[in-house]
Length: 475
Image 1 (cartoon, rainbow, N blue to C red):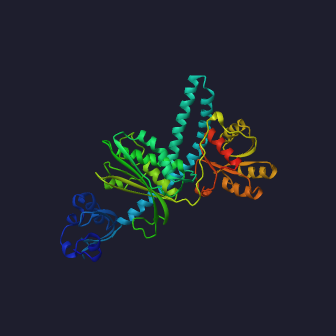
Image 2: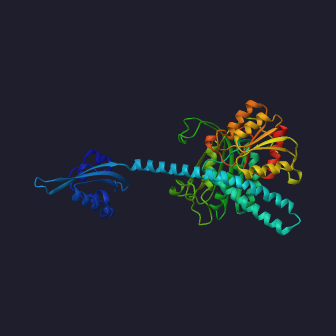
């Protein structure tokens, strides 16, 4: 009977077009019985009704409206018409859903981080002891095989924890100055073994590429994830192109969203000639646990891990794909300002560096503390242990000949590892400090460039090499 300007704006029908037509024809179509009749019956029975209703516009698109309905009566009290005041809440519901998703991911991230902190402590002990057993049981093949199985299973667990932390942006990163061309050249053989022989791999690398400030180990994992996805998108063969370039983004760069920062980046582009993605798949490509692969063929954490790693590294990721035209993913990594440093490889356990210095070991987990103390003592070091930041600080005031502070980052109480380091610098300004953690808690501060860090779970060889580098002043 009546159709105002607001209804014209919401639904697309003019008042002249809508007048005299049925609501079923205008707004409901096949959903007439499940939507219109339900609330009409409620209005007639009670005199009023309010709630959310699914409707459609003139162009066929679906909307949700917040409807407030009142029954209009004749002078004799009999029902005459229904006055319905509708508000389009489609956009609001979409924003609320995005907020719920963000809150859900944040909750998953907090849960993942808490579990990962404990799991990485346990895996540090399991991996380290399993590696020691593998070395010491060289004469007993049966027992050595069991130790190797334990090590392999724990390593897979550690990789899963790292993937979960990556998409939650809570993995502990150790950014270094990295030559991306050299890193890719080092991965060349591994990529060619991983990618099918019917897929051609091409590298395009400029000679004047800038250095990037990024965690090299996690970058390698991200590259492998992207290349494996590209391989799976080319079941009948094709071409995989990996290209590097220098790029400067200004604040007016049109292709970027508001969360992208201007600046200088090292860009890596990975392109394939595969099947490409439909728009609905592309829109969800970076969602955790979303995958188009068969059950058991993928976890859905690959691209979300890459996205989380890039954002946590102060970089960005863009993806472009069309069905039948392949997929291109661009990863932008921040340019490094510092000079490059030589990366020292880890020696075999039989040649682990030893020492006789005194190390203050701080970890609230007794198993990890005992394990690390045992490993370091076996290399000749003298150990002083503390289970909290405050205990470690008291120890530093009492013992003056400590040569290295080796502390966990995430610890309960007033003094986290980073806060302990700040207090320790006041007492001993030149004291070398080595941090360890399996979880980056935002409340603990950023582990940025210049922070010496050992990621949990760590192997005995990694612990030995890192400690010796710190003590020798070469870290």
